[in-house]
Image 1 (tube, rainbow, N blue to C red):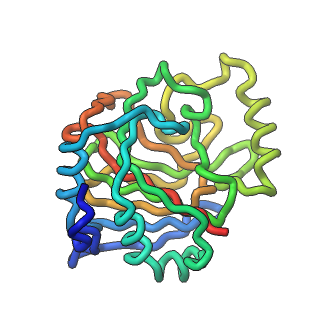
Image 2: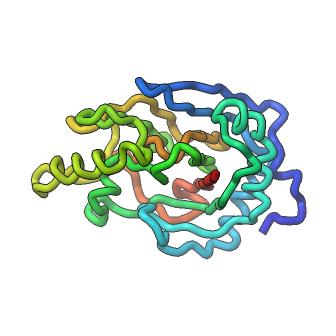
Length: 238
C-alpha cells in the first residue's frame, strides 16, 4: 500500500475547485478537478492488491481498504473548506474512513433503497466524499430533491416523515423503480449532476440525497484496472 510516500496525497499544482450551493435547501457541494498528485499510484495499488470484497453496507458493489493516510491528508488538504464552507469543526471529528469502491451490482440485484437516492447519515454534521480513479463517461454522481416532501437532505427532524412517506409511496411493488436512478423521475428531481472524470473529487454533506449515475449501458466491470474505480470517504462530526 502507498503508505511511505505521503507526498502522493498532496494537491496537484493545477488543482481546480468550485464551491456551490445547490437546490432550494442550498446544500453545499464542492467539485475538485486535478485533485491528487499521486492518483496513478492509488490506481496501481488497487490493481496490484485487488483484494476487493462485497461491501458490508448498502453500497451496491465491492470495496477494499486504503491507507488511513488518504483520509488524514484529505482533511489537511481541505481543512479551510471543511471549516469555513461546511462550518464543521475539525476538533469534533468522531470517525473518518475511506475505501476503494467499484459498483458491480446489476439492476435486478438491487434492494429498494439502492434504487432511489439515499443519504449516508441523517445528520448535517457529516461529509461524504467520492474521488474518481477512472474515466467512465456513462457514470457519475447526482444530488436529488424528493418531490413529495421537498426534502433535499434528511436530518433528525425530517427522517421519520421521510421514512413514512417512502413506505406509502413504494409499498406497492408495482410502484417501485426497476433499477438505478439516472436523471429526474416522478418521485425525485435531479438538482445537480457531475460526470466521472479521472482525479475529480466531489464532497457534500452526508445528509444530502444523492445517487451514483449508473446508466443502462454501464458494464458492471469488477476490475480495478478497467472498472468504475473510486475512493469513497465518510467523515462524521460530533
